[in-house]
View (cartoon, rainbow, N blue to C red):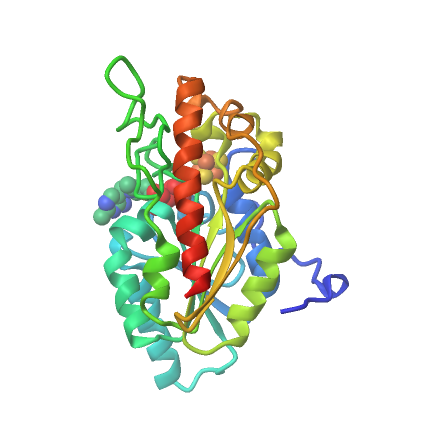
Length: 298
Ligand SMILES: Cc1ncc(C[n+]2csc(CCOP(=O)(O)OP(=O)(O)O)c2C)c(N)n1
Ligand code: SF4
């Protein structure tokens, strides 16, 4: 959905928070709230977003905001939507969930699946920093092949995380045939905000997974967050996609991919990898894109 970016409010609805410098997740959250606006209700589970914005007695989210149990983000927010309707609250209120990849792809997946099945009227944003960051960088279902985490440490007997592909939240949610599923990245704020605006205009359950690099967990300099996020897109290790009603898949493919080494070698979590690992990751990338192209051709 086209946005007139000159009309975006100067007002920040998230400020005074305590994230690390260069945090992709908190940057994405600020951009999302520019579009969602004041007439909104936010819910978030344990994770970096809650820990940096919502620890009593401090509050850095300047709309109604609830911290939920970790597995219950989508079901708690769904209850708030139902309560809002029952109380006759303004139907223009947007109900927004902000969860991490661990809280979404693993621990909260059942609750999100239920909300999608019921087509509850909410927007669910998954901030994907590819691990459980708030508790010290444990592997999640979104951790990519080769990444060293505290539960998949690289060493003599391990190359780090050994799952070939990230679990596909995009496809899992598309299979629920909800009105809108998308992937986005802090590398492309315009695309991210347009997707949030599209989701806001639709009724029903909408899910957006945002690629949100984490300097602390990935091991790069805070000022490199956007460059790292851009390299993930240019090397084909992340993608910008949309799916409407589980049917129409649109996925932006770069004309050609940069070598994955340009992305991986900039981060400490991949520093143990060598040329043969880069080759293997490029092979997995080809398989992944062949799969995405089959989705688009369906
Ligand atoms: C049921 C339950 N299990 C585990 C925890 C501990 N915990 C709190 S935050 C967190 C990590 C969150 O990771 P993620 O959802 O990926 O968000 P991030 O911190 O990376 O933004 C964990 C495991 C918890 N609070 N509740
Ligand atoms: S650990 Fe990572 S995700 Fe968490 S606040 Fe710091 S930069 Fe952000």
